[in-house]
Image (cartoon, rainbow, N blue to C red):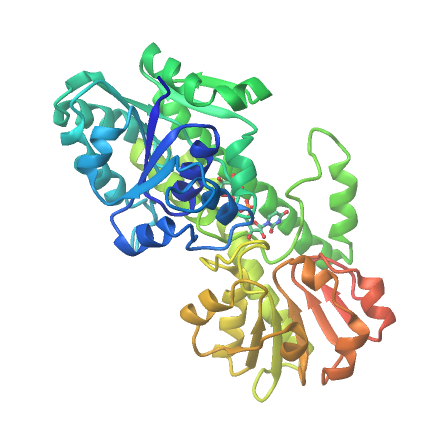
Amino acid sequence: MALKITVIGTGYLGATHAAAMAELGFEVLGLDVVPEKIEMLQRGEVPMYEPGLAELLRRHVAGIEGSTGRLRFTTSYEEAGAFGDVHFVCVNTPQKHGEYACDMSYVDSAFDALAPHLTRPTLVVGKSTVPVGSAARLAERLAAAAPAGPAAELAWNPEFLREGFAVQDTLHPDRIVVGVAGEKAEELLREVYAKPIAEGSPFIVMDYPTAELVKTSANSFLATKISFINAMAEVCEAADGDVVKLAEAIGHDERIGKKFLRAGIGFGGGCLPKDLRAFMARAGELGADQALTFLREIDSINMRRRGHMVELARDAVGGGFLGKRVAVLGATFKPDSDDVRDSPALNVAGQIHLQGGQVTVYDPKGMENARRLFPTLGYADTALEAVRGADVVLHLTEWREFRELDPAALAEVTAERRILDGRNALDPQLWRKAGWTYRALGRPRA
Ligand code: UDX
């Protein structure tokens, strides 16, 4: 009989995972403790913007016309315990307030709430990003609290999905990493992922701590790559070099690679910054803090970029923001997402506002979330409206829509033709041809 799967926590990761499991052919029950979230999902609606996810959900959510009916939702742990052969735990692990360490309270409560309902042999699979050592601790806690005892097994299966590509990354992962303590868990997970494995996704089996470390080290590496190129951008600015050319040239070396070498205002979002900090905090607890001191520098290079962007904008408007109008294109931390968590774009917009600038923000998908976080900023319904009357235009999130803007049309409405590209994603020639002064981080002035 086909495995029955539950997904606990229906945020970004969980909602996508639940829909993907249904797409792979399994009966799936998604659980969340927030009833409003469950009601939305039951209607086939997604609480965030993620390309393809709403369609995938509607294809499977029970009660929606024409759906397979394989995906249902609940708020009851009792129901989840009775239903599932495999339980995926996908709750979030935010940064602790006022500390670098990761807040494990949602993970711990999910395990505590589920365990008493595990009366037959089952596999619980952790997907959340956790400090190394958590899986071993949770495996013991699970076996102690579950009526099934040690037959309630644990595996750790980190998730590498990127926002904006969540559906694709979940259905066609570039690797499947599983941390297990026994063969049974491996067997079950091979069954769950049979389809992507057959399509060629590598299935890599390891112990718990290594699986936990794979996730945090992958994110640290990506963050390091971005901060590396941003450090080069700083040097390029000092030496009158061009970081975009430099990245292109070093990227041809296959050992370096072209990806994640876009200099700009740096990384943000709900993962990279907090994972980096949690990793440092955990290494400290383990007595290995020296190994990760470089991550502190990665973090500070990244945060410096935001301040530098503000300085460039201040220079561009003549040394002070008072009475100046600043158009900000982009609010989300990356394109194809409505996520504004730790968004470099909004951070820059907020700093300029606090220094007296009149900031008007436009973003294709992030307006609602941005307004909630920064209600005092100005917002416009289109890029053109944001730019109207601006003394300087800042391009801060690399949406395709912004690359397709017509610089000549914007030149008609702006007060001053000055654009600062915080993402090195616009075509300087195009803007200069339309009479704009184009400046970007890490590139020569003209
Ligand atoms: C990241 C990891 O990529 C993913 O594997 C993990 O599961 C979760 O964290 P995500 O948060 O969706 O995914 O964002 P990502 O695509 O990695 O981008 C992070 C940030 O880096 C964005 O703000 C982006 O604009 C910035 N970035 C990316 C750069 O500044 N330069 C680049 O070259 C690439």
